[in-house]
Every structure is written in structure tokens, then in C-alpha cells.
Length: 200
Image 1 (tube, one colour):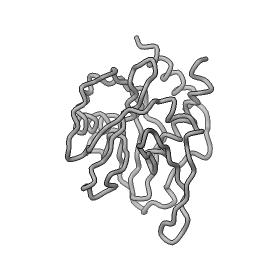
Image 2 (cartoon, one colour):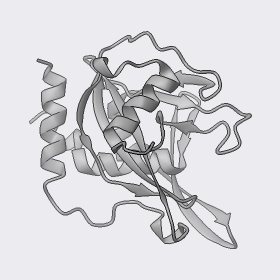
Image 3 (tube, helix red, strand yellow):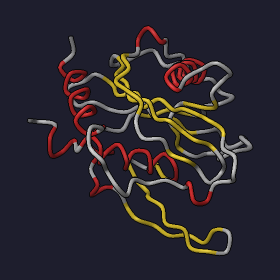
């Protein structure tokens, strides 16, 4: 058994066992009908664990160049876990048999009309990642502790649809993580309370 898997599972269960008001969501900006989607938060099983993130190709119609978790829309008959595992395999060549799922976290409704379920999971270190160039321009692995540290979550504002919109930005070694991806990380940070409880 993996000590990291046990620790993440404990923190995940404890964090999701309480009411937590004020989690981030763009539900108020979403269209009336939303489509279910899922992403995989793949944590690498290392002494200093990381998280696998991707850069979307610049030529993509939706969110070109942005940092994202592997993921996408649910296919008919799929649940969030199955969709997240399928998308991770399609985008990065990660086999479902190499993934140890911890659980589905707080859904995030996007302004573009997706109801996204993040699935937290553990993967072996140094998996042979094979990106699909149609969906992934590059991938990288920032430290989990860095991502979950609220001190690294910078609050920004921008004009959007005639108003002011607040969002988070996380900068790591030249990689700009923002928007939905940063919001999901921030919600997970509050659930896990990694820095406060990880060494309990």
C-alpha cells in the first residue's frame, strides 16, 4: 500500500465530510443548460508528489494554449470517474490500470456551460506519458504542495461581458495556471487543508 494514497484518502474523506461554504463556481454565469464533464487530478506517488497538467494546443477552438487537467465531456452511459480515466488515456496515454482513484470532488460549473467533476487519483511516478498532439501541446508536473498553498493563489480581475470578473492565477516556472483549472485547485486546497493536516 502507498502511504501517500492513505494520507490523501484520509484528508479527502475528512475534508468532504464537512460543509464548506464559499467554494468557487461560475454557476451564476452559466447558460440554463449545462453538460456534464470530468477531469482527472493525477497526483504522482513521489516523496514530493506532483500533479500532471497539460497545455492545450494553440490551434484549439476552445481555450487554446491554456493549462488544463486531462478531461472532457462525459460519453453516454459514463460516470465522472470513467470519463476522467478515459480522457487521461486518450490525451496522455495513461492506462486506467495505473490509476488509483481516491474520489470525486466538488463539481465546478463553468461559464461556458459545463458541469465539471474533478476526480482525485494517484498514479505511479515517471509513467510513460504519450501526449496526443491534437489535444495536448505539452505537459508538466508542478508540486502538489505548491499548487495547494493558498499563498500561491493570486487574485486577479478582468473585464468580461461588460462587467468585472474575479479569477485566480497560479504561476509555476513560467506556467500560468488560471481560470477553471486554478479554481478547481483552490477548492481542492480547501477540502484537503494539505499544509495544515498532511503531517497529522
